[in-house]
Figure 1 (spheres, rainbow, N blue to C red):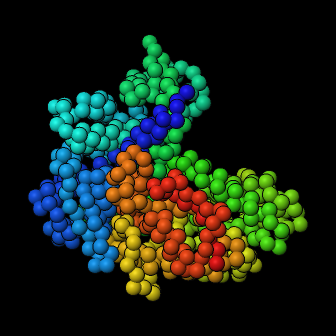
Figure 2 (figure 1 turned 90 degrees about the horizontal axis):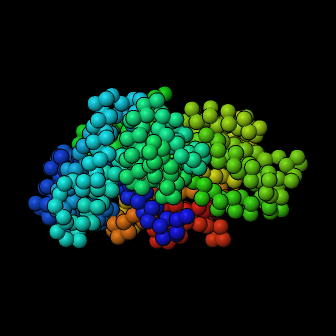
Length: 535
């Protein structure tokens, strides 16, 4: 049994692995292009200078450089009044910029091989891969570190490379059933699980060296440490699902910024959506406990104070809507009187494939609901469609959504303010750097568009947030913020700091219920918030 202290150390390793997946590709691209050497020579320069010098797409260049600042390898200062960003080297910069070369082999392999399953790799590829698995243990064959800064940076990069291999492997094994309860309780041999037993054994040997398994003569068994990682395999899922984006980072920064833009009817190019949904589902269970508390509070009130139903904007596969219905039915006063006061359930999504999956899952769960197309950026149209097609007034519903407001398609705000943003985030659209003041104005306009439909029963929202890069850098291994910033920054999503998000909501005339708010973790490192916002 692992102590809480041991669990904190292992959780920190997961976060460092995620940092590695997020940082390695862009750091290596910046190194290869000469950006980092130029920074070392100059000591300090503005991002506009780097953009011009290297013919870069400033928006994605900004995202990449911010990830380095979040690792403590640069100082990044944002002046939102003048819309200038200044980069300055620090004591770790020359150490990190030299060692970034060691990302190269892992990046090359992950670019060439989109699956790490042994049965999809050639003999030569397997040899390359297993050479990679063993090389990270050699500490790059470098002499002992000269000082504490060098030791810290070397350990960062070594763990990053480990994460680029362990992360995709863990997701592959978990999604394939490897971490099923059977394997967690009993020892097993490689040939029980995989036809290519020899290759699979080498993968297990890698995890054994990480401390996840004990190896007998011909069998493997999870250690307590390995069980910890296996039970949290989905924590890797969301970041690994963005490997299609990371593989194209050099092109996004220095080439065609629209290379991953999908056309109507095309599958998404920037993310493995199935993996993303799988990873999200496992990671979100803790937040749903707080959501349950809010749902129970609302639907235990007198019936004339309750919403007529629930609208899930961005319903995905319908799982959240199904969960909410189950909570209401089984744990609230409303659930006892559904015959007299039926619950209107609406699932809306921009993605037609998601709507098909939602319909199928709702039917399977024997739940009646309306499933409709909707755009989070156009609530007026959604409200009109619900009224005309189904006689449903959107303002009579509780609106809910999970990790969606930051993922709306960018629109320049029709009305701008003279605000000076307090956000230090890096935001882009199709490669262009977005002014942080405009990003806040855009969110304000977004909230105002929704305000008429949520003033009465509210918006129950789970949202993702960024952290100031200096705060992330000061807390290595304690937050997944670097990974969130990279995955969302390179895919044109707009995660603001938690306090900025709430301040803009209040500016739009929305107030959060202070009794029902929550943040995760409950500290200055919060990257997730749960709020009930009402007019």
